[in-house]
Image 1 (cartoon, rainbow, N blue to C red):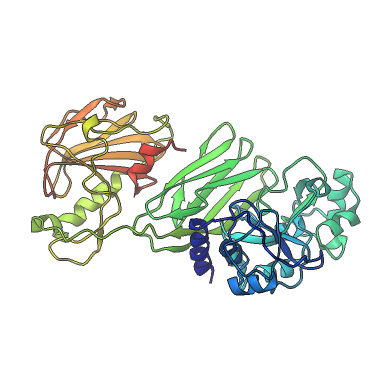
Image 2: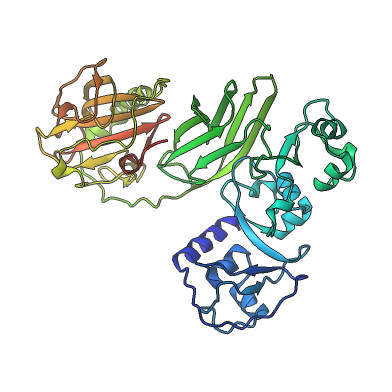
Length: 467
């Protein structure tokens, strides 16, 4: 149901047409759930966000033409029980919980779940759009949060913060002051942002996951805003995350394999605070289909697809991207590895599904191909250390460069390598000459970017600076 909802939302984004013509709608009272039309809204998009049919939305508001909306108009949302007044939507961030959201919006967990037609708590995944009551005056909401530590009662927490224990219980939808459990987050008076993750310790003030909705072949950035001295570990889709300290806290980069089946996968964080308090949380993220195209089947030398040859080479190749150097050697976007005349000449893009000699489409294109000739000059795309050079059956002449933090670039099908393992290189430094060695159908450069042991779309690294 959620995936179909996402497809509907995508369609709504494509058609965000808003007319400023009059629209006839019922003047719903405050006792009915309603939504205020915003700039960029469409009736189709609103229906998708609130999971109602377009026809029911039209009927509830006496709308004859779905293409006519007025910004600021009040639309009654039909079929929603247990909540009244103005509604809005939010995007769920990592670490947020149904309990934390229910306390923030002064709504029971059951009502919030029913409002969003949740069947399981697992539907509260990172990036999902959630229907919530609109808070007209944020200043009227408690603006801080606190966690009960092991052995601490809600009464003790209230005393320490100079608050009334019963008021604290009412604010957090508790039946009494005894109902608070250690590890739970509670809304309190203060200066902290209530949008910070409810499922994590108070010391961790923010978790940023970029992008919230991931895609095959993409690079994911996980930022933790927290004080120094925290021990962190984690995993994304069963791949280990490596965190590195920053001024704001910690950051990890991880690639999403291009052949990962679309669906929900756990993003897990665990660690220990400087005071010894341990924490752990796991929340699903959505990995979407990149819709990579299928190339025509390529005719190649049979030796280059013989498992007796390709499997040992694959093991070697994958092992090169395993070591994680703690020093980050690059800064900003990666540079093109080819001369300017070939920079935007790409005979084959990353991720394309591949078949060789009539085989099944069990392969994918693991890099970005640049046009070139035998002897074309090739350059390092970022500062780093050369960790491998050699000649392989499938990849031909290769150079592999370590840029730190588990990020590598690889240059395949070279006719000649001009660097050696251990060499330090800078962007634009000549490292080799183009060729057609290995499994090719003509001269070109096959350029790969590895992040966390996974090949990712190199065009992303040419277009933006990570992290």
